[in-house]
Amino acid sequence: MGDTVDAVRPALVWRVAGPRVGARLPLPGRESEAHWYVARGRDLLTVVSPFRWVELAGAVERHWRRQGWTITSVNAGRDRPGVAAVTRDGYQLALVIGEFGEVAVTAASPGVAGPVRRAAGGAAPLPEVHCPYWSSPV
Image (cartoon, rainbow, N blue to C red; front, side, top):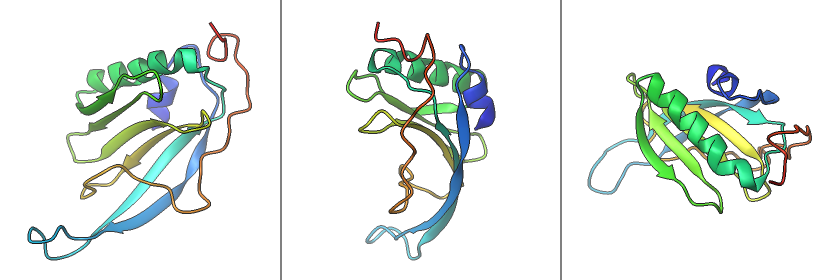
């Protein structure tokens, strides 16, 4: 995930997010057992203006496409854009913008059938580092 965040220009300030583990319960009538997963990520500490959210999501999407990863979902809406992808070896990636402007990039191990949610109390930190470009209201 570090290479994803490092590919964005101008550079962003980030921290390694705590690891998360969990299980997906089987789908009724389709699967017989739960699937365990592990997720890691990066939390952005740079304040990203809502006017720059779509641009940030686009930069991440372009990087993932250059890596040859399959884009599985794009939310291009201005409210809270995001993007999701899957790697050749089955890892699920997501860029998520939270309700208060917190931004996280996550990767979950194969076997996860949906977006990774943080455990209670594990929310991304509110961004606090200002950047002349990303934090600009224009």
